[in-house]
Image (cartoon, rainbow, N blue to C red):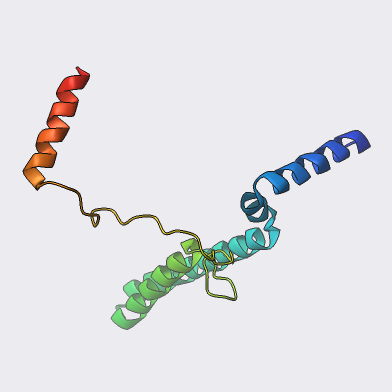
Length: 132
């Protein structure tokens, strides 16, 4: 069902407001090419899984181990291909441009905290007891 002219204008205004408010999110949502690429990867991967399954069954029924192993490898490669994110021309996942100058999130477990391990456990225990 097509949108009326008024609804189309409202939609365009909302798109402009979104682009002005959060351009990174708006660019991520515009990527219709990436949606087609993901569907194509899923289709090719599913076809590879089916072909691998057929090879696996034929190999098992004819007692040809190499054919069954090859079928398993084709199945595994198809599943990995289908569910891995598409890479852009610059090598980034999903074709998203790399963020320049963006701060990296801190690594979990690598930051140094003051106090020993036992002191931190005691502090956590005291905080919990204070909440009750």
